[in-house]
Length: 149
Image (cartoon, rainbow, N blue to C red; front, top):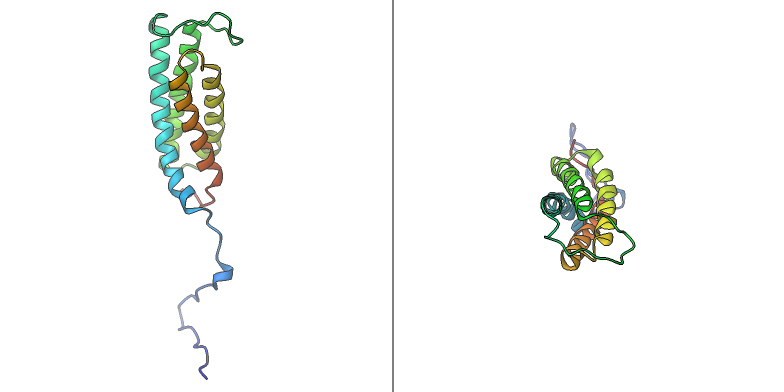
């Protein structure tokens, strides 16, 4: 029979496997980095949608009988402002800012709702943006690793 060896002086014993901290889903850890990048991309797409809506009303087709009746220029400003803020939050997530996760979840949710309301104007583009926002929300909510400070 062998006896367990005592740790050498000055070394820290390794914790048992049962004492390990659950770091969450490894896909979510990489997903958080990808979510930061997608927030940047989503923000740039929002800025492009906004500029196109502000510049001319001929870019998007006007929908007559839709519940959310905003002028296309108003939608342009909404997308432009959301896009700029999404870019800053995406940059914050890539830098590891602790505030950026919660703000990223809130803004991705707000962007998801705005693009749902934007569906009649550009359905394909809005659905792609909604899918990106759903992934961003999932990745930021499921990653339990500590952000880099």
